[in-house]
Length: 215
Image 1 (cartoon, rainbow, N blue to C red):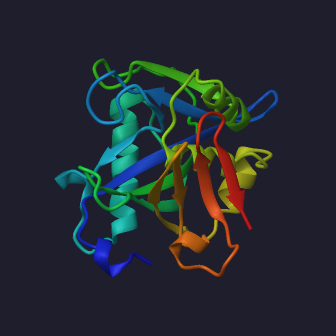
Image 2 (tube, helix red, strand yellow):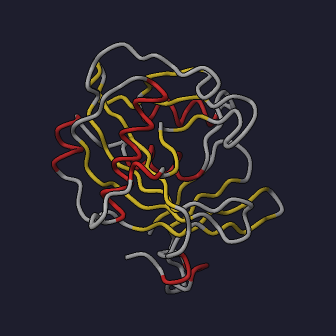
Image 3 (cartoon, rainbow, N blue to C red):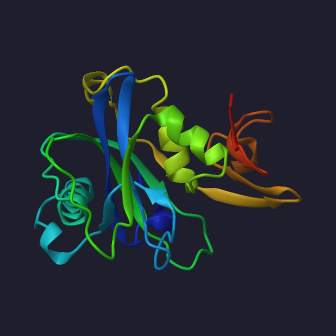
């Protein structure tokens, strides 16, 4: 359920596109250009809702799903058909541009990827573990929602399992606490967010590789 203090944020939709590879599930990642939003970072395709994504009487999740489908078609020329809500991400208070973003699991429809000039600098299919390891070596840049989503896919065997076991999409209200060595990003299940003492749901980003802690 969306928190009252965040219910008036702009909304976006993102597609976490999966395919079955030789060594397990792979996910499509895009590198953004070295300017604009998420400059230089590796992300999933997606973007903010546009008027055409909104249908009278439909809910926010349905509108966000249409945005994810449209943005994927515009950014990499893939026409998605099978999607399942995965999560909802609310950025930390105080960041310059706050957008509530719905993530959807999607099955690779096949076909050649055509990256949109000016929006996508590079594309890669990577296993979740390979992407996290590349980030840990400093070879690619990931933002916390992308990193945590990839971490959550580590034990997924195949696309069918991912799509059929997706449950009620949780909300992740990200908070950032600066530390001497970097920062801690944490969510509602962490003691820093008011959970019981010793509870953990955080990324410790104090140098590479990042470390995920959850109790």
